[in-house]
Amino acid sequence: MQRFIKWLAVITSLDLLIVLLGGALVTKTGSGQGCGKSWPLCNGEFVPSNLSMETIIELSHRLTSGSAGILVTLLCILSWKYYKHVRETKTLAILSFVFLVAQALMGAAAVVWGQMPAVLAIHFGISLISFASVILLTCLIFEIDQKFDARSLIMDKKMKFHIYGVTIYSYIVVYTGALVRHERASLACPDFPLCSKNRPMPTQLHEWVQMGHRFAAMLIFAWILYAMILAIRHYKQQPVVYWGWIISFILVTLQAIVGILVVFTNASLSMALLHSLFISCLFAVLCYLVMLGTRSKVNAKEAASTSKQTK
Image (cartoon, rainbow, N blue to C red; front, side, top):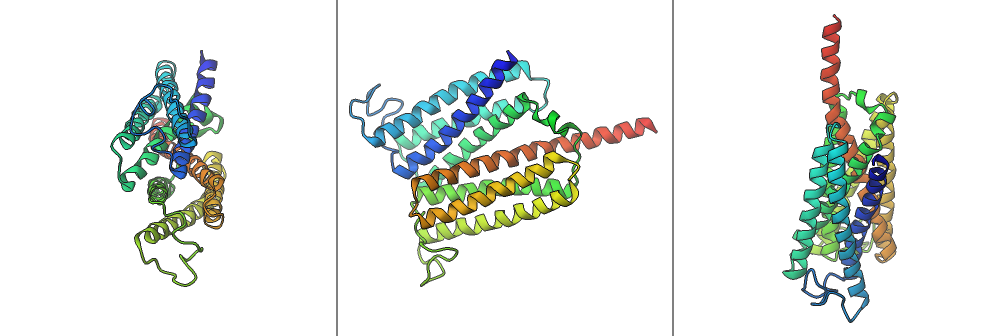
């Protein structure tokens, strides 16, 4: 059964990643109304008779979201039953399911009633939490923490501050990026790093949205760079922290490069999807570091208790 659960966890993680990228594809191609204002039916039909490209994209996104719902539910039930001895299992199972349901309901509401771009931008963030929760659940199932000896990990307050701070801030950056997409502001500023060669400062809403996201992205790049330097200097003996920050910096660098290429490739579809892919992976890695940070406090208490008993 455990082998089956491992395969299920991998397939569920991939399915949720496809859901995330599919949502970005729907927004990028303007396919949100590909099935009209009907849900769960498509244009009032179970199998739509007229299949335009927008309909195919929207319908595919709905089907992958539906399959993800089934897979996540099954994974949550089985992990709860067979891995309940691991402290974080129940919390992650609940988060995975609740945020997936919230994402589905929000997507349905957007189709039927429509939503403001500021509200639609939350949709991607909700999906991201569900994806990260399933990834962490998969890590627990594969016992990644044991392979890196993470159960004995102890971090100082400074490192935990950077882990929690960067993760929370990354969610804000994700929201600003999703807002750029939903406001159709990807090409509002045709130059980089300034908005335009003729006028460096934004003059209207779409430009402010674009430049706000750029500023937020530059800040998280600098923050992750600083945290990585701290990890390299002080956590070489803790490979999970050491490599966690190095991988985070690689991902945020790729994210920044692709973000710049979005501007210079006229917001090409491939660059837009890669942009969503890298931020999804980065957020999952940061969330794993958060889980380790919460364990660190428990590990420190256990170490102190053991030390007192020894004395």
